[in-house]
Length: 117
Length: 113
Image 1 (cartoon, rainbow over the protein chains, first blue to last red):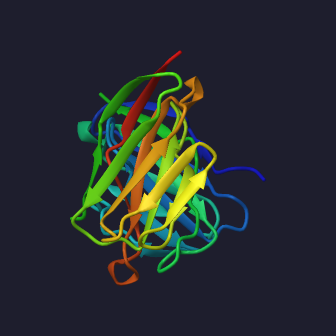
Image 2 (cartoon, rainbow over the protein chains, first blue to last red):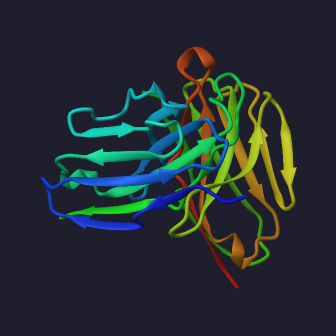
């Protein structure tokens, strides 16, 4: 079974530029998550999708971050415009179900390392 | 917001030694999870704990879900060089709090052969 795919693996941009990350979850997984992992910290959930609907985006900085999962499969996360503090690894994860009330294992992709100069 | 306090932040041990790390929180969690993250990779689940007081093993790893549901520990016995990496605890919030995962800050483990 193929794992969660993410691209690009690395991205370097200047502040105020735009950037987009792509994620392809494990086939059949209904729930998709985007996490931000700042160096030296654990992952922090940005947004959770159930199929193509948003379940939780309470920690997504909506003035500059946006995400979509139009067909309920692939997802893109965009930052526009980027700030220095957005430098982090952006992890995508997927699970069979939403996991609320009972845990459905989340499988993580390798992440995209973003550097904002 | 909810926070997990994970300690120690880093550990340097000799191969063959046992390791212990723990997480505490002011919030009650539904589920406790322990992950390992290697450089350039995403976290991989090691152990999941579902009930208060539960003690679960996975090979040389043993983890426990605290009775108060606010803490958990992970032990690694007889460490080997491939145990090197960053270990994260994570707690799953209760359903009425959204059920999302909250991660600790990580424990970086170094093993000297």
